[in-house]
Figure (cartoon, rainbow, N blue to C red):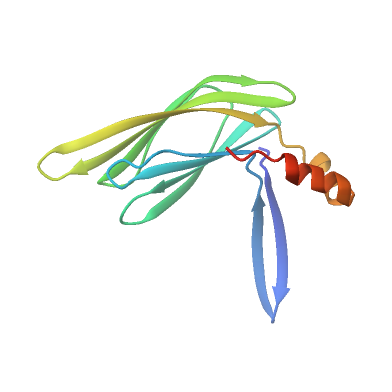
Length: 155
């Protein structure tokens, strides 16, 4: 299985440190619902999509990585009072881009009232990760880098 994880091992002050670089090509956070929200980063490589989901609750933040290559639906419940159901649909994969719709249903078990839920939707267009090509960005000249910074459009 291929991922966009790049491993780096360091030794500093006689301590071994292992770190990972994650390349998310697209990110999105839902609005808050009962003080909870879900943030997702997506990347794609060799026909597979990796979705890093961070479920932010008033108690604690939870992060999980999912890899998929077809439409899928699943529920993630890190603790008993909080859960999120993710539904991936309209997945399209080609050599240069992956696109899909994600539906995130945030549910909170509220005392006396039971489960309360709200669904948020987002469309992802994710360029396919190519480590060798992206590594070439290390060698661009100052003028090209200035152009990239000037033309960057943060959503």
